[in-house]
Length: 256
Image (tube, rainbow, N blue to C red):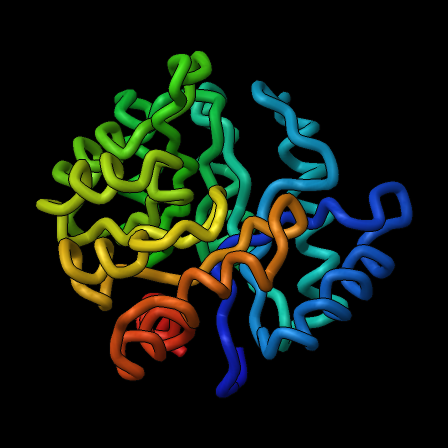
């Protein structure tokens, strides 16, 4: 990655312009990112979301994102999509996509709760590769999906792998509970995306975790860049904290 000065969005999915291929998808996403001053987009999963993807479906997702990165290597970075139920395949994809490039991190969604022992092997390889793990987390009001992780699961996993950086995506959706769940694990960050721009989220995250553990993510195109930026620009925090959330923390995590 080259050095840039704009916003880093740590969490996007290439779901816009579905059916028209990576080039059209990238064009559509960058058109809106440019309007918001977003320089880097961290992409994962593919145009379709599959709870229990096969090896072939995982590879198709990762191929799609690899093409996005190849088309715009100074705008997109990637998290390799893995299904921990397919552990051998997951470790192979890690070596193929992260160790040998172009991906820089790992995305785990809802195929298996991240506290499962299979994920320990993935974390051990992530530590060797210095690859952060973006882990989907929800506290659903009606109960999580089978295999869906919560911030409690991330905290338990992170305690076993203190050398790995974890990003608890969506801060658990129920963000007050999510922030508290990961507060005692210094290697767990939270991102801003996945819920409406509610007052108080960013202030609480900074107070409980420190600004150094909060990163901007939009979940675009499931959410808009602007609505999720509002959580940061509208927050009662210092300019220095705002810069860390929008850019500085991910530069540190990715060693830019």
